Structure formats: C-alpha cells, structure tokens
Image (cartoon, rainbow, N blue to C red; front, side, top):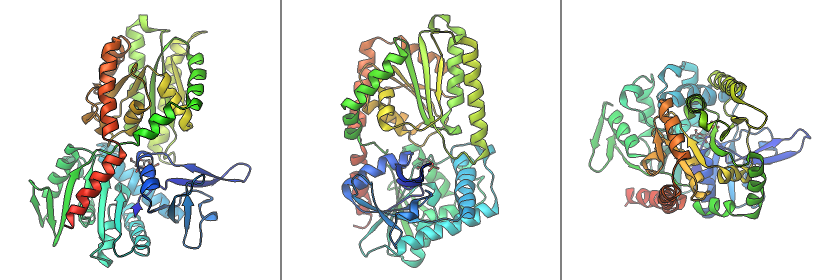
Length: 466
Ligand code: F6P
C-alpha cells in the first residue's frame, strides 16, 4: 500500500466542462507511478482535483491510469480549511522551507500544526480501513510524518516503512521547529525509514540522538525509542531508465526535437527545467547567465538559455514573489541584449508534455540544474537517461543527485561566478571529455534505476521482520 500526499493522477474539469485526467508533477509521482503500475497495489492520496470524486466509486476509489487501468487509487477528500492549514500551511510554509535550510521563510502557527495532526490522523484512518493482515504500508514524504504514529496507536503490528524525499537538515536548523519532538515521535513509529543520501541519514541520527528516551545503535543504524525499533538506511531514488530511454528514441519525440532545433538554429542551448520553487535556484541561474554575457562578449548571440518552470504552490506568497523576480530578471536581460536574431533567455512558465520535455533535453547542449537545496533532483537523472553523448550536465553540489552523478560539472549555486565558469567550461568542452563524462553518468542512472531502488528497499524492509 503506497501512501503520499500528492495523488498520481488528477481529474479536472476542462473549460468545455469535460472531465480530463492528468498525471501530477513531482519526483514522488514520476518515480513511484511506473513501479506501482508494474508491481500493482493500492495508492492512497489526497484527492485534489475538482472532478476527482465524480469518477470514484462508493469507496472513493478509481482505477488508473485511464488509458491502461492497472492499479487502484483511493482518494481522501480534504476541506478548504484543511488544505490551507495542512498543505499550504504546515507542509509548505513550515516544513518545506525549514528542511531546505530556509529558516527565515518558516512561518510556524498553532493552527497549521493542529490541522497537520488532524489530516495525518485522517490518512491513518483511511489506511486502517483498507489494510489486510500481511500488507506492507509504505508512506512517502514530509506531509505525512505522523501517520505511522496514528496507525500504530490502533494497530501496533502494522508493517510500516517511510521514505523521506526531501533533505533532512542538521540539528542546528531542525531544532528551530517548535514541534520537533512530536514530529520525531510520530516518524519513529515506522519500522524502517529511507533517505536519499548518507548525509541526510547522519543528520537524522544526530537529531534523533538529542531526543530524550532514544537509544542509538549507530553501527547497525537502529533507533530504539519507547519499546519500538526503527531501522534507517540511505537509498538514492532512481528513475525508470528504460521508459525515458525508449520515449527519447521514439519517432514522435525525434520529430518534435527536429522542429525545435530549427527554431534555435546553431546556437548552443542551455536548459533549465524545474518546478517553480525558490529552492530550485532559478533566479541565481538566470543572474549567472547574465554575468556570463556581461563579462564574455564572445558568447553573445551564440548561446540561448531556455528555462521551463512548471507552476507550483502559487497560493503561497513566497512563490508569487519569486515568480515576479524571475519575470523581471528575464525582462532585464532580454531588454539589454536581445536583437532581431537572438533572444538570450527563453522563459516558459507552464507545464509541457513529456514528449516536448524530452525533445528539449535532446536538443540542448547543456543541462543546467542548480537547486539551492534539493532532496534528490530526479530531473538530472531524466536528463541523462533521455540524452546523447554530446551533452554536459551542470549540477548543484547541494542536490542529492550530485553524490551519485560525480561526472557532472558541479557548482555552488550561491556562487554566480561558479555557475558562469561552468557554463563556459561546458560550451568549450572537447567532445571526448563530454562522451566520457556522459557515459559514466548514464551507467549509474541505468544501473541504479527505480526498480533497483524498489527491490533493495523492499529486501531491507523484509529483513526488519526476519
Ligand atoms: O519531492 C518533494 C515533493 O514535495 C513531493 O512530495 C511532491 O510530489 C513534489 O515535491 C511536488 O510538490 P507538491 O506536491 O506540493 O506539488
């Protein structure tokens, strides 16, 4: 049984009042959907679309995906107040900024916390009403940290694993959370917890170690707390390599890529793809590109920076503010350098289809992914899986993926000069070096795909009960 806040598919009413079904955006969905399609099971999540409950049965379930229904999704309805206080409030105005090290953006409020508890309990009740004797419950991400506690309260024998998809911060940051103790107590009712990287595991153990009543076995990565033991391990999440590789070589994608290539001509194309989020460092990236053009006239008219950003969480002030700053920066650079034949920055603030996305990957010369902090960044892996050996990946050293993709050009995303230097290096890189770096990264992405991640996680989880 898979449980997450975001549902994999959303049913919405179109302008013509027809019901349309769309796949959701985000790392959790793109990694888990191919897995559950293959291995089957039940997915439980918040039903967030305005037509979601028009297509569900009396148990609030629907078979998905629509073109090839192969697993069941159970949707949990949330009230407007719950969405505001649990999702926009505690999840995204408190935990999200704090765990990405933006303490100053955290807005802790009692109402947010109380509703977070209430909604986590609601998730637990829905899980309990579905669970069979031997079922494994696999809960995902920071929105649901208390669900293990609410399940174990009613069913102490339930088998629960948790995967934490965002960074786990150092104690000095974590300790500023007013409900740090309660959050850990909830999470520690899981039997097994996975993180993307070793540094998140070590931050987590360090935080847990400060909690009264906890006993640690560092060597075995076991945490003993209130008669319960939790095993911790890092498992870097992978993507479904074969799916991306296959679509990237389909005729529809190649046709789209050929069309786009004509539009951009012979200019070097630098590509940024993200959810529109302040953690992704989009503004710094644009400023770094400006710096490159300011200081290196020889690159002008020869490079285009394409930034595609899918809108996200736009009810939160920080996000609309950032969107405005990005719009202004793009306008400034284009105003300064644009001429009849060259627009330096092409910025698209919209969702694009998977085929178009892969076509952009394919025609780009450089992938520029510079989050200020990112749990993993699966886009870096998608970029490699869908691309050819003539491309260079520039990756933030603060993305979880940089611990694996060591052949990318790594940058400090706070240092604009370091990003500008890396773009220069990538533009001028000899093809032999590009090929060598790319092949090494492709091997990693291929070997450590989502199936590898899933089977290893499951194996370790089963050991917990052996
Ligand atoms: O990977 C982190 C994450 O929060 C996921 O939980 C989520 O699917 C994704 O980012 C997108 O965020 P949201 O669900 O808030 O749109």
